[in-house]
Length: 498
Image: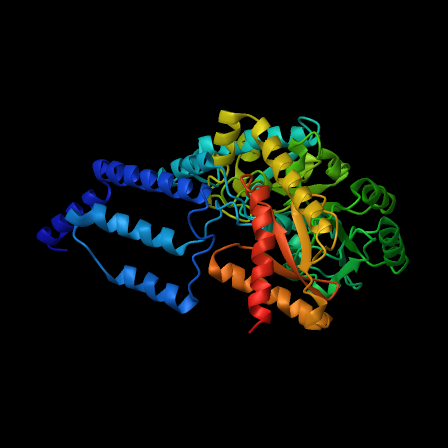
């Protein structure tokens, strides 16, 4: 490379790494986000800035194709930030009551930014000593809050509940099916994974990835509250044992995604212990109730599970992704992988194995996923998490009571957490049959979402097309709920009058 070109390249790099430019742009960003969050709290913006995929993709491509000189960096930066805000979704809008993704505590984002900007990565302790220490401290603290005995358990943090469930079930497979890590799944009788009938699709996906096969997932029937029926589980395991069918694990839910039903973990633990089966709990959404004195009973028995997962990026209200895996017996922490990487793991420091996260996670390089949670917990204490749980659950209970009081709305269950499934019932004068009512509810949902007035989702419950809300913003209030009813009624009338 010619000297002049090399010098020019170095000048461009120096400009990109300029602390002064970074500070200027950073201050601009924080100022704009402060205004943005204030507008959302005042309900002054759309919940979702809806654009068709091809339109958003076109704008994203155009941004990549345009270039500016370094003298124009501030204006260019502000233009890009404005584009992202104008076209993104607004989880911090109190009328976002859609998916199980929270209006995260804004302070957590600042700590996440600290980790991202300084690129705190993890794999082995020496690559990320502070990030590793923060993660380990949080595993210890949250595990003890849940009720695990100090010094007896282990855990790790990974990127999302799907990866967390896969990691825990991989551990279960390696322990339940000896030599499966090195020799593969070779049993003459095909092994099975037993799961809640409403379990998240990632449980079935895990079975495929683990070499069991998705058809080897046995779904246990549910009781009248859509919880795994412990008696049915006992019957299922009894039949499997009679046929000498290897059982990798029983996967319970706390709570299941569909309506937020919490399985009876104490009863399931009794059954699993009786049959000598690994018990796993997908508590991605519900594990955070451990922070609440009022709601912690929902996960009674979780400490009897061999493994369980909890997502901090759901109901601990921190930015994605931050998913915890817990093992009740710390001896299981190294059963997931049985490999040697001499360029990473230093035989001269064998004591580091306990803090070298790469020994326990699917990821090698991993971002410092716990900075946001650590920052909020360190600044505001555990009480903020109890408040977030109690307030969002109470708001959902209020929604349920309001649904019951209205003749043209039907709640399809009583909520145990912050998830509520319901449907709108149009006046009989329209003569709609059940199928048409289902389709109407889907159209209402789609219209409201695209308008930016509300964001809620749809689902099927026992073949019925319904509306589904998850109160994931603690600032959602009674006025918002009343407006939701009005908006649904108005939208229904508009659709039916066409």
